[in-house]
Length: 302
Ligand code: ADP
Image (cartoon, rainbow, N blue to C red):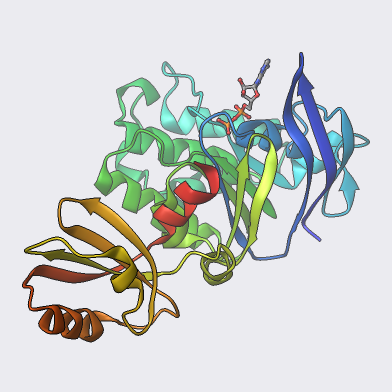
């Protein structure tokens, strides 16, 4: 198993930053590690990469215990830390040469060229890192994380602070790298995992609140995915709304606007319309809403 995390606890003062966390990442998976700020994402990633120790529990990468042989783990792991610390006064190529020299790999110059090609840094390779845009600095960070051709890639908020175009570019690079690697990426943005991850773990206050495929998380959360948002021209009795065939929970938004959840994820718009005709009231507006992962994430961590 590329990554195994068993009963990990990390305590800062009297705060349990990680509170008995267990999960595995299978070979080739792209795992989205999601949670609000302060949930414990960075702490977990630092423990997996051997930068800080856990207080208890076991973490292994490729079957190697991180606490026992963190150097061996680092040989097979690539890590892009949060805020991507780089040396602004170094040139792109010079920096990547420096990084590859740390791994004492043969054919370093060729590897630097490969990294520059893979991350689209060809045009910028002679610039100082400090002169690059944030998106290109992030590419340098990714090239750094890929330097040793790792089996496991750990990316902490890889698209944080980027503009929408840069986000897409970095996501594409991650998806490309993820084709032949096991990837764990943290984010507090749900769309991020919707775009590239095949599995999601959601953590809150150092505990896992969901761990499954995207589809199963939607189903498991028990949240009805389809609802109808409707505005009538006059007041209605909520009890009567719940009697519309297929209707589930009814929520008053304001005035005469309502959200009617579908009890079994069926479209109930025709029923709502018949109800209005029967009661001789008008439907001013009506549309079907599908809950996305974003709202599920908010409900699980809110
Ligand atoms: P996330 O990456 O999800 O935003 P972190 O792992 O950075 O969360 O932090 C989890 C919790 O642990 C936070 O409440 C944070 O303040 C706390 N924490 C993290 N590092 C330290 C530290 N070195 N000392 C004290 N508390 C810390």
